[in-house]
Amino acid sequence: MSYRENTREVKIGTVKIGGGNPIAIQSMTNTETSDVKATVEQILRLEQAGCEIIRSTANTEAAADAFDAIKKEIHIPIVADIHFDYRLAIRAIEHGADKIRINPGNIGGEENLRKVVQAAKAHHVPIRVGVNSGSLEKPLIEKYGGVTAEGIVESALDKVRMLEEQDFHDIVISIKSSDVLMSNETHRLISEQTNYPLHVGITESGTLWSGNIKSSVGLGMILGAGIGDTIRVSLTGDPVEEIRTAKLILRTLGLRKEGITLVSCPTCGRTKIDLIGLANQVERLTEQYPDLTAKVAVMGCVVNGPGEAREADLGVAGGVGEGLIFRHGEVLRKVKEEEILPALKEELDRMRTNLSR
Image 1 (spheres, rainbow, N blue to C red):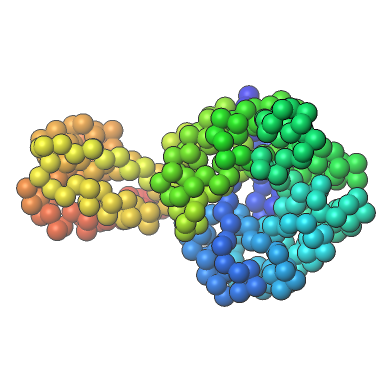
Image 2: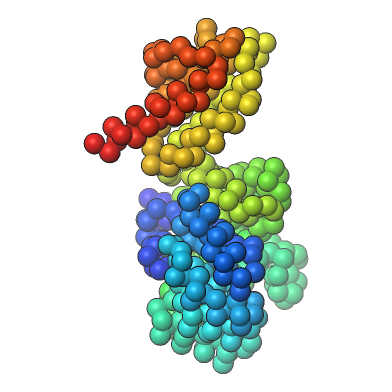
């Protein structure tokens, strides 16, 4: 049995994580939270992409106050990201935050932490304990001879104990590093020492290209070991891309079944169609069908394409100015090149209709 099946269940708004519940996909807004219109617009885009929990910074009183208005317009739980100021944590809780993210060690002392915990208890709001390798305390760096997985885990568990001492157990743990191998080791170690649900991600992973690679490798190692209850792919770019990547990581690991998996050949000298452009167009098309569980293939050769992709539920093989639409290797029809996308859409619509019957 994997670690995630034995973690404590924590309820964040309407979403449950831990206890074997499905791994929830998160992201974070990059708008000014006090700009309610811009923040809501971004969250709605993220919802459409498949985001299930959203986090927004509560770095000012205006930002904390905005949670009330934002919640009225969105459909997923919202987490308040707090740094240092306990008053903003309490304010965000009172204005509707479904969870708060704090570091109990730098929230302003034991008395102020107690006030935050009291507010969280009163409003039934869980607390995410966040510890990053870049903010590891100096004594732990000296103890372990540098920033290490052991030091990060000790720091996180120290913060958890600060909450447990106040009889608070509605906790999610986040221990992040930009070092993929260190992240893997920290999650392995902490999974052996606690049963609180884990928020997993590779922090500061980079741009869309490098960040996707680092996140896929890191999250793949951790999730593949049965560890992790909710994830965020951290990218420097449009947060919608974080959701697309997270969904694909989970599907690739067999942890999510919903959604269309796209497969496409790498092209070769036999390719007589703009396969790269076609594959990108098909990928965008399939994102409109999050309710379908299917494999769609884009192949560059009408001779071998259908046979090579016979495991696909639906596919196209391109030729000179034409394409073959096929299902499980069997050709359904031949269409002109400009008719390929409409024909695929027609077949996807038919699959959706059959699913709803």
